[in-house]
Length: 205
Image 1: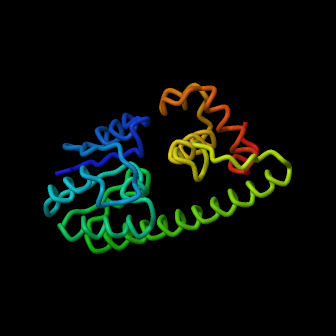
Image 2: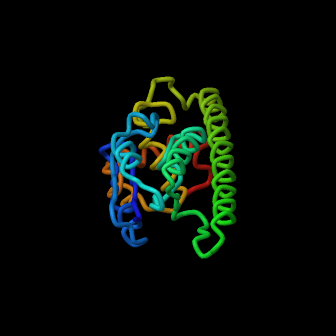
């Protein structure tokens, strides 16, 4: 059985894109939730899915980071899936389903996962370093006032900030981002300007 899992970080975000991709891939049953990826244990639908899956099931997600916030969380979740005798299919990563040898297929799949996790973790570290450097430069220029912003890398709505910045980098329009995140256009413009100041956006227009 092909089982899907979809997650966004808050009630403000939309699951439609993930669910549509999972359905197109032939997923028969989808577990979905709107909850932060900070703790795997505090994601009830993920836990339900892990209890539901059986040997030879295929767990499908759009992106690997839907399974956890960091490399260790993702690894732990993949291990739990494999312990149940199921396999994992990540739609945004190369698939080796056409390879007949199950051992070779598992080897190649795990290799891709390890490369992705390492790359994602290194990118996260670089982003944090750039954000810290950008804030320090903004302070020196008098552009950073020091008040904690909700929509910022460390604010209470950092998940939305990071999501908006990611979409801006991907070339999404302000109108599209507003529809997908339910964040007002004016606020998105503020996020865009602030992200430029602290160096998160570079030359994105």
